[in-house]
Amino acid sequence: MRPSSHNPLFYWFDLLARISFALTIIFAPLRWRIVLWQRPVFPVYGDYTDFLLFATDVTLVCTLIFWGSSLLLAPRRITFGSASIWIFLAGLTLAGFISTFGGEDYVLSRYHSIRLVFLFLFYLYIVNEITLPEWVIVPVGLQVILQSVVAIRQSLLQHSVGLFSLGELRLDPAKAGISVVPVGELRFLRAYGLADHPNILGGCLAFGLVLLLAVLIYGRNRSRWLALTAFLPGLLALVMTFSRSAWIGFLIGASFMVGLEAFAHRWDSVKRVIVLGSLSLLLAAPFVIKNIPVFGSRVNSGNISSDDPMRERMFLIRAGNTIFVEHSTIGIGLGASPLAMKSRFADFPTNFQPPHYTLLVAAMETGVLGAAFYFLLMAVPVIIFVSRWRTFAEQPLMIGAFALLLALMTIDFFDYYPWLNAAGRIWQWLAWGLWSALSVNSSAYPFPNPLQTAAYVREA
Image 1 (cartoon, helix red, strand yellow):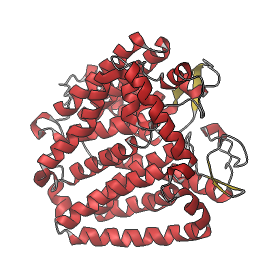
Image 2: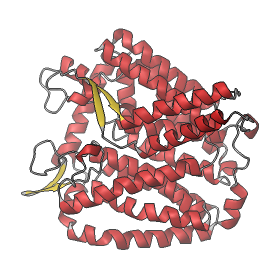
Image 3: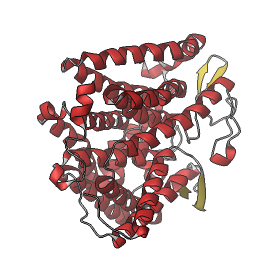
């Protein structure tokens, strides 16, 4: 239950915490940052070693400060959510601190371990205070719209749109280091939006689209129309990122929800998705048809020998496995995998960076203990959902939260930003928080039970 307090300051702090939480989600992909401490280690990419303050860091800290102030003014019991999440999450946070003692860069690893503490507090805020889906869906929709408008324009113009004050990179497809799809002499610019890389933007869009699709399937008529205004441009922007992992992540999450509706014979929902798919195809078709050679180059036959990005990823995974075997006890320290690559390998054919496989990066940086906790955070929700699927299949919010976890787990197999990047971490910890909050008994958590499920299912 919400606390009963007549202190007007409580309501102001509570409101400011909610606004800050919404801004944390909206700003999650935003590249804008302040360099707190520049620590160049040539030729390692500066973002791997510098101490950075992102816009979403500011809003996250504000969320926690305002929430803490509201707790002081109106004390109430803090719950930790599902034990199947918070125990492993606390263990992962502890493993991060332990990793600093044998780390490649003690200061850098301690910086990242402190970040994990703030993320754990962010998780607690979600579990205790986010009691209505609108408080997540509305900022997610705004995030998708904001990034989509910029990304679509970038892709059509094939250069930046001039929002450099918001962190937009100066995008020139002819410039080295800019992510493009090469087709013969053509270098086709992938959409960045206001994010640091097309893959990061693609992931954020994929996660947002999964939640918006849940609204389109289970929501009321008005909420469906509002979600549609964000979903359609978001899907087009996702296509324009040319992020294969994000495409697959979205398809996995979406297919899960649609497949569950079909299995439950909720044909009205399936028909809505068919109509939505048709609209999406009509919207994306002109862009796809115009750039068929680009898509042909990106969606190759699967032959790794002819795919430079895939060859690079395979090399990084082999190198990461070597480092993990040599430092399996407590790892080489949070955030230090690029530095460990530089120290371990004299001849490195690509940029020094973590392997594009989140579980392996967690194992490298935090050892077997951290890897075990991260694996359990991925696996246990699947086990719980499968074991209780008959119950959860009738709860739309549980389905949406699990679909989001599936999308994140899919991308975990292809990239590392849910572990290391600020935007990826916000989405990963948000997903854990939502799942944890929804999976506990209603008597231990302030969500109304059954979370308006009956109303949603009747309308579906």
